[in-house]
Amino acid sequence: MLLDQLTWALAHRIDSVLPRLPHGRTNSFTAETHGSALEIQTGVHGRIDEATEELGALRRELDETLKPLSMRAASAGTHGLAGDRHLGGRALPVRLRLDAGAGAA
Image (cartoon, rainbow, N blue to C red; front, side, top):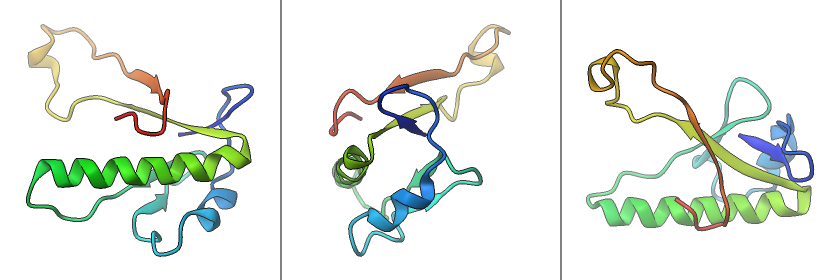
């Protein structure tokens, strides 16, 4: 999610972000269906630490791109394997985490 750095409201400004991302990263960042979200995609890796390293670099590049635009990135989601059977019938809350730093995972 793209957020306005001053108000923390959704920033529907994906069209101003994508062209400013580092050259050669067009396959790593794609816009979602609405203008306030993007997807980060790593390449295929044989080791988890290699994928983690690339994802961290991509997130740092995104952070550096967003700072001059007065925006920040946030993420939300649930574990892909979490489901009703793991929660005793309770609904799974969506947790929102605002990135505190460029290298945050």
